[in-house]
View 1 (cartoon, rainbow, N blue to C red):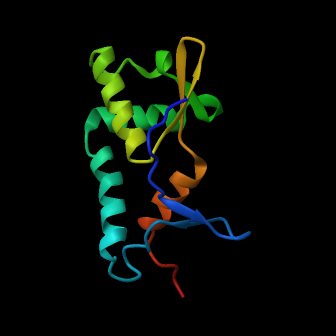
View 2: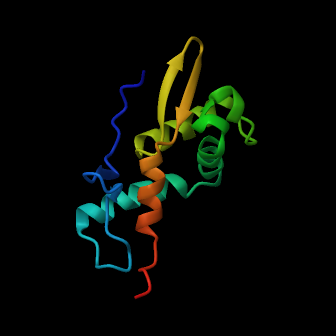
Amino acid sequence: MSNAKVLPLIEPASGTGVVPCCPPLTERPMTAPEAETAARMFKALGDPVRLRLFSAVASHEGGEACVCDISDVGVSQPTVSHHLKKLKDAGLLTSERRGTWVYYRVEPSVLAAMGKLLAFPAAA
């Protein structure tokens, strides 16, 4: 298990699904803390290797991926580990060690929060 700090991207709403860390961009201007949280998330995804790793984990069968299954992104294994750590530090991934392998997961609430942040308002 990792002891990395996971930043809260969302807070669960009682029975209504998820509430993103920040309001949808079209709803109102963000506060400074909301903008800092969202910026950490976007900064982590701003690197092409990290985006590929995040996508590989998010799209992997079963909702989780062993590092052994996602490390073929054109960089060395230590670089893959560095990028996965950055994604974890931004609160985008969680991990669990099983034997000699580490398995990564994208929590469904993280994807929902990202979707709500970038959503257009519903047509009236």
